[in-house]
Image 1: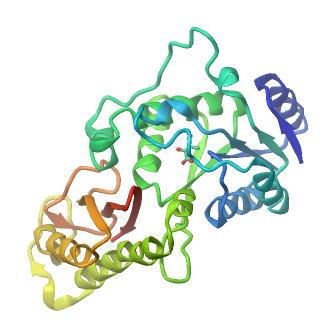
Image 2 (image 1 turned 120 degrees about the horizontal axis):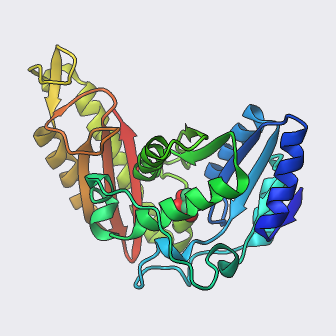
Length: 295
Ligand code: PAF
C-alpha cells in the first residue's frame, strides 16, 4: 500500500492504473477509521481493481465552534486498517495541499436539501463536504466512490451534486455498520464516557420502535397520497411523538432533530412511504450523534 501526500503523486499512480485498463474505487474518509469505513474499503476492493482511500480531516466542513481540533486522528492505525482491507493507495494531504493560498472556489447545493436535517444546525457543513468531495473526485478520477448510509443526508447531497454536475463517477451507498447493541459505528463514539455510551443506544432503540410501529398493520391508516403506493400508509405525525417520547426517557439525551423525510429530496413527508428516511440527531453530553433508517 502506497501513501501519497500530494495531488501529483495520486495523479501519477492513477494515470498508470488507467493506462493498464484498471478500474478505481475511492473511499473518502476523515480517518479515525472503524468497521464502518472498513466495510466501504471491502466493498470497493470487491468492485474495483484498485482502491484509493483519502484520509483528510476537512476543515471547511467544520463550523468555528465544532470539533475540528479535537477530531480523533490516528494515521498509523488508519493505515494498518486500510492495508488489512486491501487498499492500494492512501491519499493523506496537508490542509495547504487541498486548500492552497488564495483558495476561493466552493461547490454548494442551492436547494433546500442542505438546509434540512443536519443543515439546520450545521449551515456551512455540506458546502465543505461537496467542495472537498468534488476536489477528491477531480484528483482521483474514480470509477466508483463509496459512502456510508449512516450519513444519509451527505449521501443524498453527493448523489445530487454528481447528477447536477454530470460527474463521471458512480456513487455507491453502503449499509450502516452497528455495534452489537445497535449503536451505529462512528468516529465520534470515541468521545462518549461509559454512561454516555450506554445512553447512546436510545437512538437505535427509537428508530427500531418507529420501524416496528410503521410495519405494524393496526397503526396504519388507509389513505393514499400523491406519490405513495395505494394501500395502508402511516402518518408521520403519529410516529414522530413515539420517537420523541422514547428519547425523552433517556436523561443524558437531548434532541437536535427527529424527522421523517423523502429519501431522495430530504423534504419532510406527512404520509410515510417506502424509501423515506427516519433521521435523528441527538446530543449525548457534548457529543452529537446521528442515525437513520429507511422505511
Ligand atoms: O463522511 C466523511 O467522513 C466526510 O464528510 C467526507 C465524505 C470524507 C468528506 O470530508
